[in-house]
Image (cartoon, rainbow, N blue to C red; front, side, top):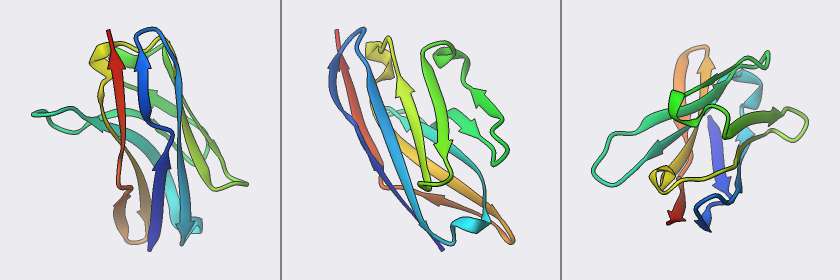
Length: 117
């Protein structure tokens, strides 16, 4: 079992910045990739960024150059640095951890990010 707790969401004006954190606990040795997803009202949950245990990263086209994913393995924490925020970034942001044996996904409870115009 893996437990994930997000923090760092809030209200920010367009052009501003936020940093989200996702703290992992439990069977963290089994975690392979981790990622950030977001879900706006009335829309599906979509991938924002992902990072493997080796540090390889993937980003949605809409956030490239503005959002940066990272992880601190010593602190068992993943981050999402969000710069140049836009109103369309408004959503609930969730972190996800994937373990490999057996394959399973764990989700955090989500943190609200609201960007005002």
